[in-house]
Length: 353
Image (cartoon, rainbow, N blue to C red; front, side, top):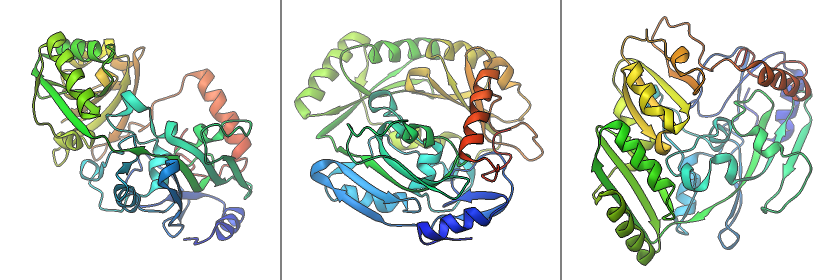
């Protein structure tokens, strides 16, 4: 099924018994069952107002098309969307709907927030086949329950997105990366110090024995802040590939299971040392990527109590669920939301147990 209008989407949902929702097929993890509902034909930018920093696009619009359009006005999606195709071995076209469904967010999240923080409004079809609209095209729009934030990261289990609006950001005049060779515990401690400083860090990561700090903005401001952080932490300006870090390129085309940990930054170094796996750390230690060559490491039990672990790439034969189990209270809320938005249980059945 490949609807090209919202009306067609409504009818397909109403007639369905179970649906796997897909766009470009580049971000799905875990399992789902049912007939494939392909949203890629619901494509196109509906509105772009550079002066108002606002963009509205249909769900199947390719991410590359949106980024190219924004670049003509020296603007961008601030949350720095990761491209995990190489990591996951996918060749599809990333769509903006998949970005929202996964709440996909890169290194700049420490400064500007996640994808959901840039969303202004959404339109989606619920499990009854009704079109729901929430939010708008300005930050101060007030429309009751904040379903905009709810849909971001819901992985298609609450409804099928059809359109969404974003606030966008002007590209900065200057960018500087500060780098220092650091063992993991000291490196993450320095990154936390940078994030806790008044110097407006837009990236704080650790990889291959080096801690990296990024600063963006007006040239004079960047130079001033960089000098202050050099004095504070002893880092030096250096070239760095933030896109490779964002896309976890270090683990692409290498055998092994890949885990994504969301943990307390202060616990990250100890967890990595206990697990004894190769790691890439972002968000000052709040995000940790792990490569498990054997696929046998009990990552989830080790992380319990400090955050949660998502299996992003499994090895053949692994039966570990991709998504972590929810605490009882959260599971109750999830079940209640699904009963309200998808009472027939047709959207991505099996995605969240």
